[in-house]
Image (cartoon, rainbow, N blue to C red; front, top):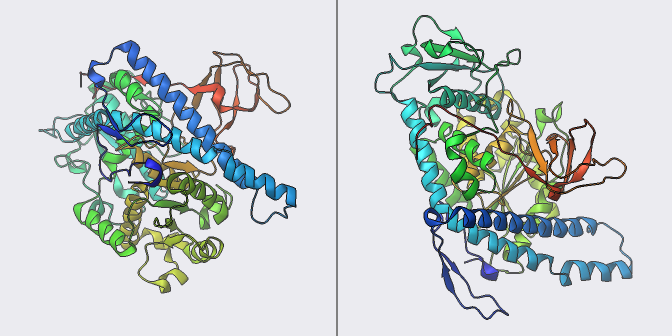
Length: 514
């Protein structure tokens, strides 16, 4: 049991019946809240979805205000006596923490109630993927061969994810051409994508697939999907499209259906072999890594050359501090433990321990000698089998944490959040300090305005009902977006005035009732 009446999140699954703890200053005592989703009317489902959306928005606003106040009154500011009093009032007497806890509690109630059906739906999707990937007669099964560019682990697996989406959309077995793989030993660390098919089962002729709009491709026994930068197949089956068959259920059960669906794809691709799972538990035991714990992924070295800027430890820790304050408050018996994954541990760990002495920073390394000579600082060293094992373990530890902070400019940062969504609704369990969630070669992030907005200088004006395309690579706080309206104008706007639009398409491998 967490302090302040919050329930600890079980590691593998959530209980379908949520016991509401007694809340101070309320007349209601403990009660059992159980919602039968299968029997709920369409009208009631719509009402619950809207209620959940409003509660989610209230939580994000409370959390955002809390974080803003804390950032505004940083420790290094020279505060006058009046400002000290204002800081004391804003941080201690305004009920931001209390509001955050209460709205988070309501969100947890709704999430817990939907978790059982969400888990059942995820299990069914995994069965469908497994069935597609394991035909009884591979020789006659139609196939799609995945070819991808030479890039990092997260990048490669997002490309393979695109291939699996295309395979599900066209009802073909996906085979992966590992000849261009950058990491050694992938097939030793993760479960095989198919137990009955391999590259040896391909016919002599394999035609290049130009996309599902290509004429008569359905009759071709084997096609290849080339995702190298110079190729751009025209296909409906890509990131940010969801199987139409799932529409009715997933919109009701999950706050972010796109993330849940991509989580299912990545969850299948990155199923660890049993010995990796055992090693993860050994690492956790060694580090005394028990729930609740927070994880951060600090990406530096080669990423800073072109793709991203350097973020200081403080920028990762701001949301970590806010999360712990809202979850455990002043409880002294809860260790504020932070698991750190980084390609620059040698500078990150000393910096974090120096600036945040009240937090316990742990990392996966054999000993501190390795920390002083961090092998992951060189791109070549990350391609060894030992480093792949370490990366696989870190992915599991990061995705199993109660709260994750990273950067979505990093493929690993996005991958961790996607894996978190594969088993539950992790909407409130992850945070990016730079870009918004996006999917390479996927659809653009499209939103619909729910209210009019008349913007000022540098802001984007729009009318209710208008479509807004969000730019995911622009750094703004979660409450503010940067995008383009239907007139082609660009600017910033408040995110609470828009809602994300979902795109549902017919995936042939998912064409009958669940």
